[in-house]
Amino acid sequence: MNRIATGFLLFLSILCISVSVYMLAGMYQEDAKSDQTFEEIRKVFDQEKPEDTKDSENANEVYINPGLLELHEQNPDCVGWIHIEGTKIDYPVMYHPEEKNYYLRRNFHKEYDISGTPYIAEICDLEDFDNLILYGHHMNSGAMFAHLDKYKSESFYQEHKTFTYSTLHGEETYEVMACFAVPVYTGNDFAYYVFTKAETHFEYETFVETCRKKSYYDTGVTADYGDQLITLSTCEYSHKNGRMVVVGRLLREDD
Image 1 (cartoon, rainbow, N blue to C red):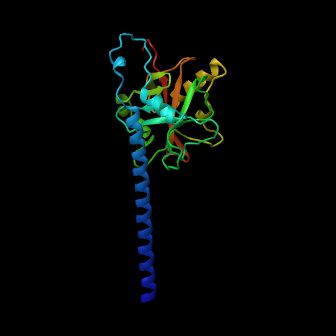
Image 2: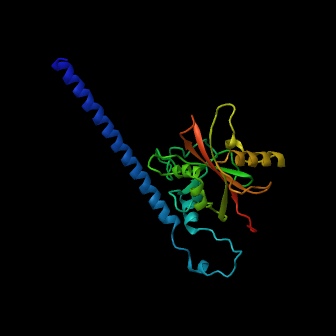
Image 3: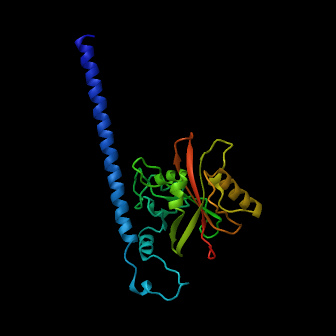
């Protein structure tokens, strides 16, 4: 190989390395900016409870997080907060039914952000639903909904059986009912992503039973017609166009 060819290959190698470093640096900066934005939002949500709510004697009193109310005032699309103890899943939940996947690549402030913000599917009706569908990215950094993938392990499930969903009407606790991964948009897949409101008992029961059959393990949790469900969904990479899905059932008063 002559000097010109060798020099050209060396130049290409240096160029490829430089581009790779530049792209990695850009991704790191974007991740850092996204993390900072969410940290600022968490500080608002996690503000200390007012004194008059700390020692309430009324066990039935509904507590609405003042931080969530403040975030809702800043952006009315912010309608909830999802949190799974012991994971990185601790985020505001957005709802913008006027446009599909509006927060897929937008942050809380509606600015472009590759991480996006967890959001409720636009086909859901917040006032009348059997199942709320929440989407979040599976980031390589472990951010957003990446930790849903850990539910493939039953031991992880045993330590994370519930999650909380705070709303403008109060805080709710959900029991994990099923955890599974499936391919989507195949034309013959389990279309969990369209089930929001059952027309009949049978439709509801069929959805619940299918979720439980596809689950990696039996959680022992089921749901009856009328129980509210939340479905958390993110990308999953063992299937072509796969999704990791965790379905929770609203905790009953007698549980």
